[in-house]
Image (tube, rainbow, N blue to C red; front, side):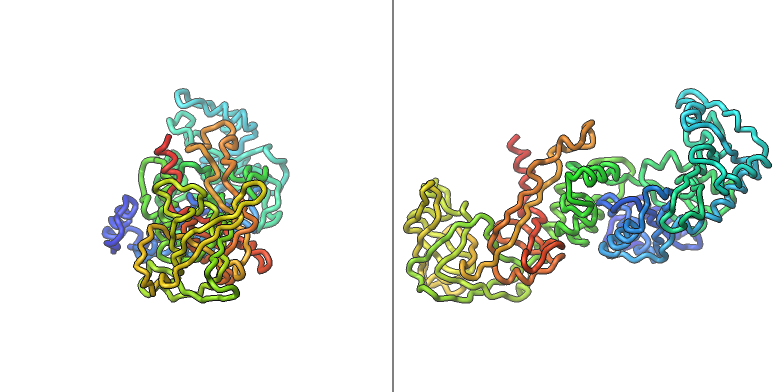
Length: 556
């Protein structure tokens, strides 16, 4: 039954109890029901991991059902992106379904409610209907159309379907209880008129079911055993149950869990669309976006996202998760899987004056020292002239500076110990060249020099270096809760993207592939951007080696 290696959450406990009692015949069938009106984000990933994970855990299945009931915002392109994201996360659905598959059945359900005196056509405006519902402390009042006859309602509803009325002229409402403490039971809307082209059904329909009517009934049609939703749907559950009971259809049950809230992030589709449309980002897959496609392009792995979703667990109360945990999960995964390479992002030339001119030496380095066997080795060309990071040299070094300065010694990663002898400046006083001598007996792996140096720096051979563009991505927002601001864009981090047009890397990185993680030694984790070309390789920083935001918070 349960996988003992994973903690049992409250929904898993419900499922286990249902299996023991024989409810639903011992079956487990969940569903993931996205609306195809945008790209999936990390919050959806939590729902995907939960729904598919529960089904896998209890030998059940999960349906992918697109809630395509709003033709004005939905596109086939979104359908395809959603399918790609789910597959990339490592899950397969049992059936690919669409709420639009059930439009005829849902229409028949609605006419059944009308025949039973439980639904009516209302000509009131949206404002009039809202006013008629009352307040949480005051009961609603019926509109003039609530007592229409069954025959008149059936006729009007048929005419709505036939397209005889414009958008907003009429709606179909459930006839429940205008005094109910739950506002969702005060004659909720079931259907509205929308003369719009649908991405699947074309112009066949001009009336569309509301989410509350389509959701539970689609679950029942598919005989979903456990319909898992986020907490905002708790007040909707009585209506979910009422409709199923009145229609006498399969008794699917709804269960709610806390959605994912991340600090330094917005996950409202409306706000994400605003970021895209107003060019704050380059698109839905911008590596700063919390979309699954954006995280993937930035270099996040499916494993890291699944681990993150499992770590935060399934709660009954809303809470805010520190985005640092997501960053920890990707560091943890990439530390075990990313190949190590050397890249110099802010270069200054180092010349080894006693190394033979024209000589090239091929050193070697493990691809991943965290893995037994290192996953093989790659050759690293070494020569008299190297690029090193400008920050690794100081003209006058403080006491605990263990890199290069006149008279100081440092080890070059995978190579030799060198000692700085001199440096050259240009007319503006900028250091342009650092001069060193090397100790031939200090070669890594063969060191007989007896020298002990405290610092190790990375480098790239000048004649063998390859030029690439590097994009340093950081959090998109400076505020912990950007959505709390009236203008959430005011807290956009101006340093969320820094572009280095000319960085130098090991020649081996020209064979990098998108999706493969690389640790640029001492610099962070990177991946090749999907928009790269052989003539213009672009690397995106996935995450820094350490949580620099935590350090800044400690300073404040």
